[in-house]
Image: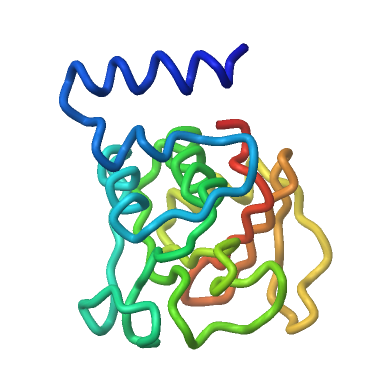
Length: 167
């Protein structure tokens, strides 16, 4: 019922306030859905989430860009859930662009994002999630109640979203 409401009521409300293109057209679906860069940035912008890249670009095939092309909707909504639950500023520094490690649950496949390492976010992760064993490369990790993994890679948080974290 919640899903039906979300798919019917949210688009109607968004249409009334002029947000339909991009934000609601990709509202959370039950199956894994891939989003375009424009769809993801519309959702991030509406939630007050920022992003940046060293190359000031969004080309998925350029490692200095930050791209959201082919990102999973659950990853986008997971970041939004983190922002809402923590009340912290969130800045994404890595998305689906080339240059990250490969694997099933990878950046390229839409499961991961990197976010800036702000004190507020770090405190929220440390105080809310469960510390688990270090990753194979030695980085410390925390698991959310929803099962998503937050790895502290020193200069940023590397987050793997298996689901949207209760969106």
